[in-house]
Structures are given as structure tokens and as C-alpha cells.
Length: 242
Ligand code: PRP
Ligand code: URA
Image (cartoon, rainbow, N blue to C red):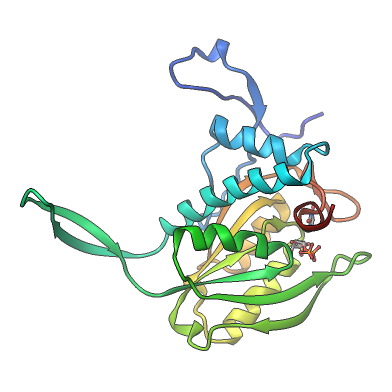
């Protein structure tokens, strides 16, 4: 049975009557103000259906993951500050526009987070990218920090923290502690994520109330091995090795 936290909804183009739309499981809702879930559009649900499917081959897994990652990055950029910028068009008229304010960098939680780097680079040319190598212990699911290499001036940048899977939240919490230890203010961290567990994301958002999370989907929960369910299995294995 589908638990209450994983609602089923009619999804489809707005010109169709509700009765004519197919139903699909959409993201659970959490009440944290600092968690933003991507709109549950037919496109997003179809892309997620591709990468969740255990029979999807690696090439397709990479292709469709990259499409969701691009949506996450584009949305993430909406949460960065902008200032007014008036420009003149070729016909001599003024357009009241905007431009981004402040420097950014990406930080990927290795290995799976590295899969999100290209999506960030596609939107932010020559963006600096730091790395934090954190691995979950396969038996205890506890995170272990092995390595970090971050831009020297990271404390003066907005940080887009990248990791597709958010299960217990242990890895992301450890990464945020590393960033805070380097002087990055919490409110300049934006965590981009594909699939989160409701328990993980809720406690993370409460622990770091000034940081923002952008995720594509909040799932039903965790299984006995602390894998996200229904989830998609091991993202790093499916993207890099299987
Ligand atoms: C996965 C994933 C996250 C972490 C999530 O990485 O990419 O970093 O697990 O789990 P958590 O929220 O319970 O900490 P993993 O350590 O398996 O390494 P990988 O990236 O090499 O697959
Ligand atoms: N890491 C993954 O790749 N998948 C999960 O479900 C949990 C942690």
C-alpha cells in the first residue's frame, strides 16, 4: 500500500480534464520553509520513471539523470541573489533586467555528486568546483570523511552543494559541517538533490534552518539498509559502474 506521505495525483497537460489524466505518485510534501521541491510536472515524473526503473541501462540512466540534474541546477540558480541591470536593445529601447550578484562555486560529495558537475558547468561556464569525499559505511550507513579540496576563497562564495541521493542525511550533514568549518555562512549554501527521504530532509532542514535545499522528489522513506524507497538503488553504481 502507498503510505500517506507518497500521494498519488493526476498528472498531465492542463488542457486535459482531470478524468482524462493518468495518475502517478508525486513527491511527498514537507513543511520546512527551506526545502523547495521541483514542480511535479509530467516531464519530471517521466524522467524519474526512467531512472527509477531497475531495467534502465546505464547509458539511459546517465542521459535521463542529466536531464533532471539540469532542471535542478536551473531551479537552484533562481535561489541566488540578483540585482537590477538595465540594458539597451539593438532597437535603442531599455529593458529593465537583472543580473546575478556574487560569486558561486560548486562542491560535489564524491562519488555520486560528481555526476552533477557537468549540469552545473553547462549553466555556469568555468565555475569553480570543490570536492568532498564522503563514503557511507555499507553496514552501518554512517558517513566517513576521507578528503576535501575546496576553493581557497570559498567563504566569500555562494556554494551549490551537489549530491543526488539524500537518505539518512549523514553525508550531507558532514559536508555542511566541512563547509561551515571553512567559513561558509549557512545561508550561502544551496543543496541540490535528486531524491530525498522525508525523515532525512526534515531533520536536515531543521538542523540547518538558513540553508536551502532544492530537490526533485521526496520519497516514501528508508528500508532496513537505509536505502531510499522506492528510490532508484545505488546512484553511484548505476551512473558509473553497473
Ligand atoms: C551515497 C549518496 C550520498 C549518500 C546518501 O553515497 O551519493 O552521498 O550515499 O546517504 P546518507 O544520506 O545516508 O548519508 P555513497 O556513500 O554510497 O558513495 P558513492 O557516492 O560512492 O556511491
Ligand atoms: N545512496 C544511494 O545511492 N541510494 C540510496 O538509496 C541511499 C544512499
